[in-house]
Image (cartoon, rainbow, N blue to C red; front, top):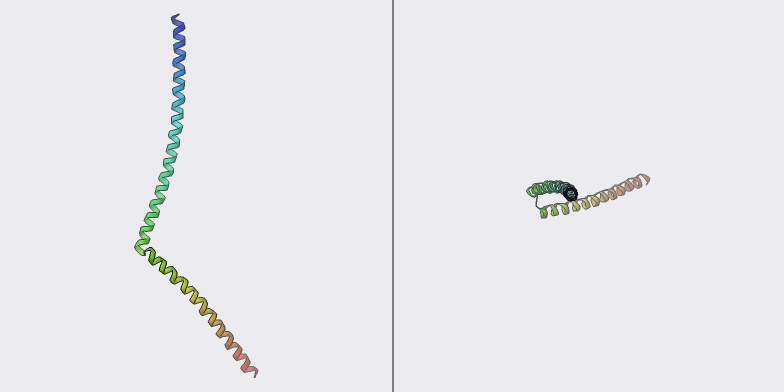
Length: 105
């Protein structure tokens, strides 16, 4: 009778050990997932730090309102260049037409 009790007890202990082993394996997998996520967060944090450093350098060069004004001035210069080139082409056409007409008459 005592050997039968020990047999049942040993099966119960073995079953509990297997359950605990499965739980530990599940915790290891979850810990591995947490480590992976932590690694991703650190990578993102590094990128944020790089962007912050870049922004600080840009703020030393020019403030956002100054950059906005500079971009507007660049657009105005592009428009002026287009107008100047068009005027130059028109004047060239008129001069070429005048020279052609003067040699024709």
